[in-house]
Amino acid sequence: MGFFGITPNVYTLNVLINCYCHLNRVNFGFSVLATILKLGYQPTHITLTTLVKGLCLEGNVVGAVRLVEEMEKKGYEPNVITCGTIVNGLCKIGQTGVAIRLLRKLEKGNFEQNVVLYSMVIDSLCRDRLVTEALNLLSEIMSKGIQPDVVTYNSLVQGLCNFGQWREATTLLNEMGQRKVMPDVQTSNILVDTLCKEGMLTEGKKVFDVMIQRGIDPNIVTYCSLIDGYCLQNRLDEAVKTFNMMVEKGCSPDVVSYNILINGYCKRKKIDEAMHLFHEMSNKGMIPNVVTYNTLIGGLCRVKRV
Image: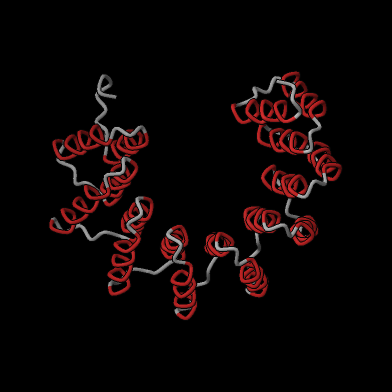
């Protein structure tokens, strides 16, 4: 562009800043900001929000907050996207309390409150095992007329399942239906996995069947949870049937799914079947990992084939 005598505008330079930020080279992004100022342009909200995002991607949330403060001093009013980027960054580094304080500050301003901001904080609360606080925040946003979406519910369902509160999670699932929020494959995966691990395989299979009835295609995570559930209850024939069903439905097995079945066979001392699966993996060009080898070594030792 320079060779042809074309001077880049702010839009072009913003794109360049965004590229540097995604490459984790935010320092180069600030160099481009200097170029914007040198050319006599004014940085836009997009320029500054992109740099805030770049700092957050590098884990420098303190620097991002400092940049927002500098923006305010120079007359730039941070918008909801800028603040959302900061909230997300704070949540990712476990500073949920600070994120909530920022959220409360936003509520007092003229910002349009949206479900994305609240969903970030609800997810962070659930990760911090503060599920009661997350449910309270859900009630609060609903009282404000903000409709939770599938992302909000997924975070809460996962949080409840982590505590083994699958009944409460199922209640939340029913609430989703009443509010016409369509569960996605992640919602179902969380429930299937929890129920199978809790030994409630029948209930897990029911959720699996309901998924299919609602037109939600199970993915490899769903099938692995179910296969693992059958293996935990020594129902290897049904585990194999589910594995084969997964293949028939066009869902290619990965190393994890093979490892689950190999482990199931080894625990039942069916080493020949486990070795058959091991060779099948290799024939398909799949590289076994350390879990595969450890499982087989343990299985062989168990039947005294040292």
